[in-house]
Image (cartoon, rainbow, N blue to C red; front, side, top):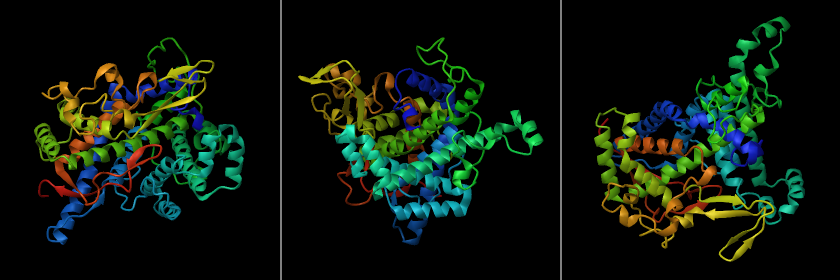
Length: 491
């Protein structure tokens, strides 16, 4: 199933999967997601505002520190759940949500126990813990020694795989359990959709036999509701990412919901299997959860350390959203130009996807800087370093959103230099394999910042400058981002 993810696929399989993903990021779909994004961001803003106001009243003017990275992780998981699957993961209001990268077996056990006690409400905590552990312990840097040895000696992977499952260490055990938890939840979502639609084609058969239809409650690999203790999720909403993929698969065709991928006109693909659908859903959860939370946390850090940027951002937000309860609408997005520039500059200095890679085609060689790289070799490109290269970027280490604002007088002087200019800024990669969800991520980030700063500003807790980083599967703030939310208006 992991090999069937869009991220790892190649050739005709990659084209088939990319075609299946495209309808989820079409303009009409993005517009449909917008109210859900604003609703989640507003829910977080009101929660933080209420906490800050209550803490200030209780301590005669003192504030209440929060881990903004963890709070944003709850929000982005909520966005993923509501837009991609149409189910509520209840992740914003989880007071003790297991943080990304915590890696605590005790916290994981507590999250699972809490989920069993609260039924549906526990999925936000379970998924947040699982996603964080997969990101941290799926990395050779922070994960099991087996992963590091496998990276250094790929010819031993088959043997190492057997050893790891026979004699697992603690980190490998955490990773395996997290993957299983996420996998089971995804298959249960698929089963939930089948149950919703079983009445259309299998009601008569089920009534006559006295048994449920096999497709209604069990995935074709036997993993589903039974594996998660029989606790059902809410129905998958029409128009969600999962609904689009499963609905079109049921009808066959190109796997793209009627919309062909670029260059794919006239090409027919086989319907996706359950495993392929589950692989795409897992990728959407993982890609839409931590990377966006990291990007927003970095943006909050950059704004908090640059008062002049904060002042200009607040002026734009107040101008575009003047009403006390006004949230960003589709027509407001183009007017949030400085907000978008802030996001882009934060992504330049702190790209969550700090590495991207390509593979030299088998049978060919590649020469770079005098070095010859044989076919089949993976080549890793460090975007964090490329984004800070002083040979390319003027004032490379400074946070200057104006470099992404064409209306600014500073714009031309801050543009990247030379032949590298076209691909100098690549937080989502580039080329045909550029992140397919980049428009989704940018829309969510703009909406979240505008909605949060409409109600609040954030003051860094002491000891966080310069920001400490950890580079695993993604780059994130080490130990979180601890801030004091400051309400901008009285409740």
